[in-house]
Length: 119
Image (spheres, rainbow, N blue to C red):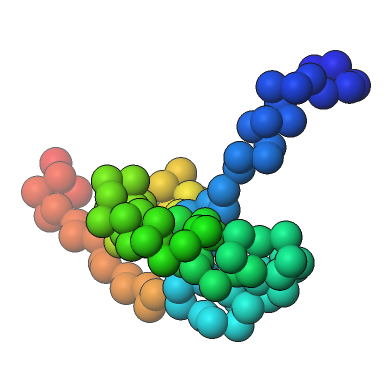
């Protein structure tokens, strides 16, 4: 990748939305969402930040646009994606088999065949 980013790369960064795990944390904890909103200047937001969709992490200009968005396919798809639990580092390790089983160990005694020892 070149040292100076091109216009296409800058557009992708500008359009980047919050990831599903970040939005999931916003929905679970209002403090997490408040910290994110505090990083944005209210003057720079559409409609001074009044209309915000938590699921899509997107601000809207008017209440009608916000209402249309909530009825739309993109919003419903995002809500469906958020129903699943987000991936964690622990679940990724479990998929690879790196789990730690700290349960109680049970010891089983081996059975000895009497026929095999007498022959």
